[in-house]
Length: 203
Image (cartoon, rainbow, N blue to C red; front, side, top):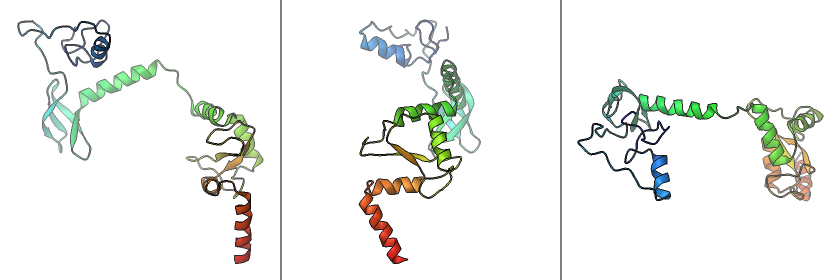
């Protein structure tokens, strides 16, 4: 067993307090389970630093001395106000990869479809069909979507107030400017016609 890891079985996390990681320490504390005593000085496992504390950091060279790893490369962050040990960064990335490896990966199209179903009660196929029926652009101004910004789904707020829709009141797909404009005037048809008359008079 590594003398810097949690003493619980099948746990490879760094020891945080009383030779337990944060998760097992707080779990024992919540369930009022007896805590292990601190290791006595005479024990063969002498206490070690529990965190990667950096000293003698040379920010220009990107090196420093870690309380656990010894001389290491460091990453300067926060505009030079802090530094992190690269060994700790690699450990954190490995844990994140292990956690992600147990989750099923979803494609961007699957995530978009799930969002459309949840928010507007339509599918990705319905969205594509609606976009094709509008000629591939905004229903009002004809602006085309970009790779980074798709057209927004507009629905009748008189039927479904808020950001979600029942699916039956979806009116079309709008660009950001037209969608914001409708939101500003609160879908007031009288105001829209008055605006049209105003522009006709000005012209």
